[in-house]
Length: 175
Image (cartoon, rainbow, N blue to C red; front, side, top):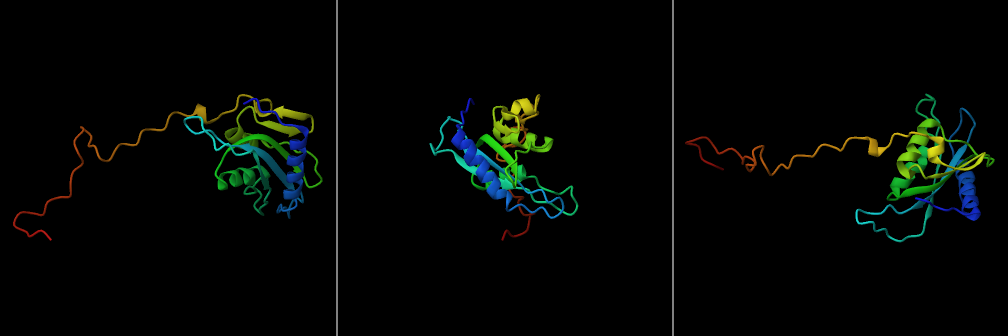
């Protein structure tokens, strides 16, 4: 990818993350988390994109009384990404409501990997790092086997056309 992100863009991401953290639903922990990412178009099979400028997508955490159903801010961000039509994450920032950087948890690193890849730039308390540094040896879509081909319903098992509707029994009158 080799994406370069300037200081102004990082500030824009941090500010967007702080703003969206105010919308977090965190009645149990009190930790309001906001996430923001810079998005570029995903090229189609021929390598074409719309040519649109990169845009920012945001998400916030949503807690649940059962704790295990709590959604991290990164989950909301990826949902918003796909609600808008998708794209590729190129730079990512996650902060608390006061703007302090927060590291994505392991599950969220995996989620970010799926939508940004190993070269996704992540703002951390120690500076900007590639996601590959935060999630070495990541499992991704390329590690899965190719999906099985769906049989063409218009061709029978031996290459014969599919059976047609059963003919009415002899001696009966067709409708």
